[in-house]
Amino acid sequence: MATDVLPMKPDVLLIDYALNDRNIGLTRAEAAWRKMIQEALAYGCKLILLTPTPDLTEDILKDKAPLAGYAQLIRNLAFEYHVGLVDSYQAFKTIKQNGADLSNFMAQNNHPNESGHQVVAVEIKKWFTLVTANGHS
Image 1: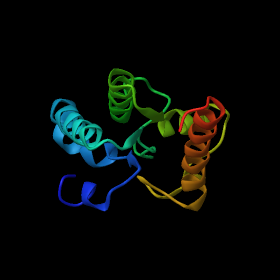
Image 2: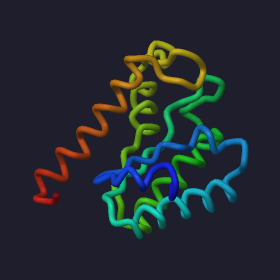
Image 3: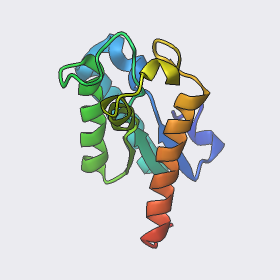
């Protein structure tokens, strides 16, 4: 963050890292997220956290799915630090609840294809639209 991201002088920073955190466990992932958030906030840029996109090897409709825990962690951190949240995980969960096959949105088990990235892009746009409508910059 300090050497590769912040020197680029971002006005807005989106952090979407949960898929890569799964192998280190929730405790270590939380520490990493907190460090990234605190560094970004100390720098002074606007910050938006993204919950993960799905992994087809787990059932997104199950509350105990491994990625569900990471999604909840990110929601909690966004609330705690008063930063933006784009809930990609919930968007895909809603798609699945509405009967769609999530494989249509994935290039492979844990990477979205163009349609999957479009789902995330729509959620990001909703966040910016909401912020603009509420008079925030």
